[in-house]
Image 1 (cartoon, rainbow, N blue to C red):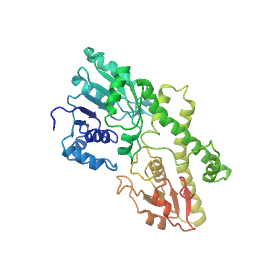
Image 2 (cartoon, rainbow, N blue to C red):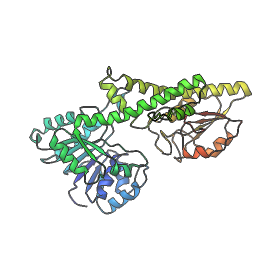
Image 3 (cartoon, helix red, strand yellow):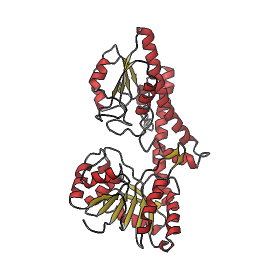
Length: 404
């Protein structure tokens, strides 16, 4: 491999590795960095540690041709991308310590003319904070390097396509930084590149996911109301959406994933008085999962009263959305855990067709689970579940619209 890589990618997770692979595919030398030595080892073997279509072939090719290499420490380059997690210290306080640690790791390597970009979802002002950190340690770099923020907006399962074709919002700490970052992304992104400042770009990422969260909360709130009013919420939404300017989303058992269920808190944490709808939407979507678990509990008790025996229960789906293997922040997983905590000698069948095994749950084939269970609880609308023939004597709790 070329002794001097052009790009250093800090973080080789769900976004970092696909982005590194995509850049390397353009015949650009990329040095990937991850704190996990097993991730580094896997990547250097030309293999992948995450499930994402097409990624395995692109990584394998890039490593074989010498354009992608990984280690646990950064090296000198011209462009540094920070793509590390930004979790929560608690529910309402974003933790940017990984971004800070990644920045400190590249600090000694930075030189005049370099480009430093944060892609990690971040609270508003994070890019400016990192700029202050860089210049306080390396004052000679002031006005001599380029600093920008550019969030990803990709869908798990379609990342390799969307990294190329989706539009990007790019915000520098000044206009020259914005231009420099735009010129970098233009090499491998075919979507439009929209220029703004760093704070607006940070807010844009948070607003996109908060907007979705609010829309889902409206659908979930409707489902709670319709349950009490004895109205089929799926039929109601279908009819309401016949209006030319109405587009209500489908309700589910909550909201999951590493974006929509998390990003609104970045706004609520910093602007609690102003973010009333955003904060309430989070509460509704969290409550929906709790409500679903309570519904399962009530169905169990009712079955026992009617039949004089304990039911067997199938919990259908664990992923945070249909047809993927990703369980992060999954409401279905939360419901399954909640239901199992209240287990009282009932038999449970846990189903997730997109994974082979799980360290907590013993998984069952979906056909077998449907056949053996008295109560069938649909938590995720996986495509496999839509074709199932279900006997009429089963109790069905449909939280994701499978039966509609």
